[in-house]
Structures are given as structure tokens and as C-alpha cells.
Length: 576
Image 1 (tube, rainbow, N blue to C red):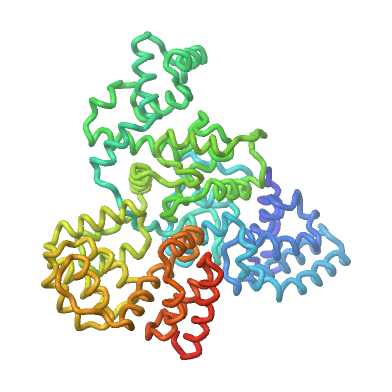
Image 2 (image 1 turned 180 degrees about the horizontal axis):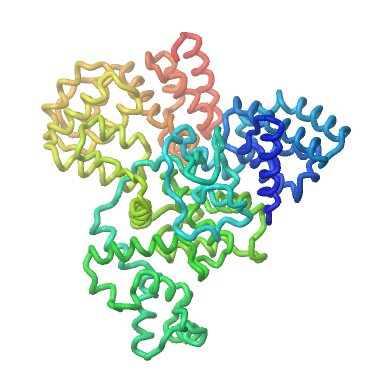
């Protein structure tokens, strides 16, 4: 959608402000005009109406602009300034201006609440907001060079490293030209990431389907004496032959990649490259895939134009995205329209992207591959940006390991971290460090520690026994000693109940992430009714929350009812 009129309007408003000695918040007015153009079909200043301001400030902004409620006053003030300009420039008449002023007066007290209402947030705003809008202190990844073609409708007045759609902003919402700092969420400092070992990355790169296609195509071209066009493109007839003879799905893309990373100059099979050469090749491949390749990468014009933004989201969130979330993000970015006018199955497009190696799809979930993560960090670094690497928990103490696990690393990474940490210590050292780290701590940290200790063999017994004197750790230590056939004192009924609550408290932080799985686990191994009915007596800080958890998620109605009653009793005793 063309919004060239916005540039002209902004210049007129600047000149009007100077001539009238009026302070004009150009950034805010530009955003008002941009959003009016993008979402409300406003094609010129005279198209503004009272309803335009109502939709902008109470619907569009809450859905798309990351801004605190207190920033509403700035936006409302800019809207009032815009009305005065519209009136004095002759774009609207006196009666229309009066109606606009009345409408803005009605909007002003409502807008802060609208900005704070999370139910109004759009998918793009929610995803970028999850990246941490409060941490916007440094400029970060710009779009790859030459990426302006991926910013349809851009007025040319925003920095190229803003979200590709241009529909997100932070409290100060600056998107000016020149060297001024951009504050959009996609420009926030990059989070520290955990990288897989280089040899693991290299092994994975050898298996990337698109790279294999590129190498096969280059060899095939050389063997057949085939040449590209004068512009270096794959000839149409050769592309058709490559599909038929080599079974390549996207020969044009494979050739463009080969040209970009220099494979056409020195064709060598992947198996002949050492790890360093493979990593260099992969770094170039990721730069190619997140830039603006002329050949279609995924078959979806929407997704192709947003490849940088989608990869950046996955990198920053450090958590997978559902295909549906990507669909909703693209719908917001493109207002539901494929820019090339075609309908593309996003499921197929994501599968095509997975062949390129940067992401993988597990059912309906999309996440970066370990080599995709490595390649993105390398791309950011080569662009001159700070892309920190998180420290290896195995090199730290028990507190660092537990803290890292509680931050929410993928299950396979957690397993590697735990195994590596344990390998560097004797059983006795590991057990002693873990339990000491959580002495007097929370149930969740204690649960992580004892879960790791359960993996340690009987050689840890000398380090375990001293913790029998700790009332919170004692039940866990007794359980560990018994499980290894070592002599242990008997637990009192009160200690057994306390331990049940303590272990159930471990499920509290992630209870709402997968309620169905939690319900299944509780159905299979939840406490019986007589235990639930007695739990309220336990002197445990999390007992009421644990009973609430059981009351919400136990599939057996009678058990759930008993848990809710027990939670009420716990709160009546003042246990929280």
C-alpha cells in the first residue's frame, strides 16, 4: 500500500509548526498517519474523521503499539495538534474540527486503559512484547544490506531495522531517519544464547537439504558444460532439467545460494570440506536466507518478505512458535493480504523453510535448529552487533546450574547441562553442592536439586547424611537413602505429607503451560483423597497453592472438590 502522501503531509506539518511557533511531535503524528493509511484506508489528510481517531487510539494502538498506558497523553496531544493543522490548512472545516476535538476529549481518559488491556493486544505486539520492551537500551540488528525491498509501503522515514511490518513501536516510538537511535522491540539488545559445540553444528550443516541441492546442482552444471545467463542466473531450460534429472524441488533457489556463497567458483562436495569451511559456508547461507533473495525461499510471498523478522523473533524469544502464531503475525503485518495476490499454504511454506536448515518443525511447533541459532548469531556478529553467548552452567557452581535450568532451557539442552555438570564432580561433591545451594530456598529450586541428586549413585551418601538435620531437606534425603538401600531413619506422617506438598510445588510454575498433560500426570500419580484431606495441616509456604493446583487440574471431581476444601482450610489457618 502506497503511503507517499505521508511524507508530504509531515513536511507540511513541520513547516506549519515552524511558522506558528507550535511544538509538533512529528514522530507521533507520522505514526497516526501511517496507521491510518495502513489499516483505515486513509489516502490523504482530508480523509481523517472523528471515527478515524477513535479507531486509531482505542483499537489500532492497543493492538499494535508497544507503549505504557502513561504514554497515551503524548499520543492524544499529537492528535489534537493534527486537528489544529487540518483546520488551519483547510483540509477540514470548523464543524468537523469541533467534532474531532469532542471525540478526542472522549478518547483521552479511555486510552490508557485500552493500552493496558492485554486482551486487546495483537499477535505481533504480544510476541514482540514478550521479548522485553523494557530492555530497549541499544540499537540492534539491522535488516541485511539491501533489505529495503522487504518494507512495502515504507515512507522512507523509518530506520530499516524496525519490524518489517512497521506496525510496532515502544514508549518513545522513534523511527526517524539519520543516526538517531531506534527504540523498537526488534532493536532491543539481543539475549544471550546457548550454542551447541562447533563439531555438532558442522555435522548438522552437512545434512542441510538446500546445501546438498546447491552442491549437486553446481556439480551437475559443471559436468554438463552448462552455463548460467549473462547475469549469472540459472537458465530456465536448465532449471527444468534439474527438476527432472536431479529431483530438485527449488533449483533456482539452490543456484542463487550457490552463487551467493561462492560455490560456483570452486565446486567441492560437502564431504570434502573440513569443519571450519562448513561453518563459513553455513554463515553465508544463513545471511542469504535472512536477506532478500530474489528466488522464492518458501513459496509464500508473505513469509519470504518476513524471513528476517520471523528468525529474529525465534532468536529473541528463545522459545518455539506455533505455526498459528506465525500465521497471525503475518496476517497483522500484511493486513491479511498476500502482497503478490496469491494464497499460500503456510504449513507447506514452513516445511520448505525447514529444508533450508535454519528451523525445524515438530507437529505444529516451529523452532530454530541448533545450527540455525549459531548461524543467526554469526550473522548478527558480522553485522557489527553484540550477540552474547550464555555461560555454560557446567563451568559454574550448583546455584548457577539450578538457576539456568529454572530459566527454561529445552529438555535436551537441560539433559546435556546436567550430565556435563555431574561429569566434572565426584558423586559426593555433586550431592553436597546441590543440597547446600538450595538450603532455605524455594520448593521449586529444591525440587530441581533433589531431582538431579536422584541420578547420583550411593557414593554420595557421606555428603547426604549431614542434611538429615535440615527439616526441609530431611524428607528428600531419607527418600534418597532408602532408594539406594542405605540405612535411613523413618519419616513421620507429617514429614511424608510435607514432602508430598514440596514435590507437587515443583509443578506450580508451569502448571498452565500444558494443563492437559498435568491432569494426566495427576490422574496417574496424584495423591489419594485421604492425603489431600490432610494436606491443609502441613506447615509449608506453598500448601494453599498446591491444593489450588489439585483443585483445578485433578480430573476426578471428588478429588478436586476435596482439594478445594483443603485449600480453603489452609488459607483459614493463615498458611499462604
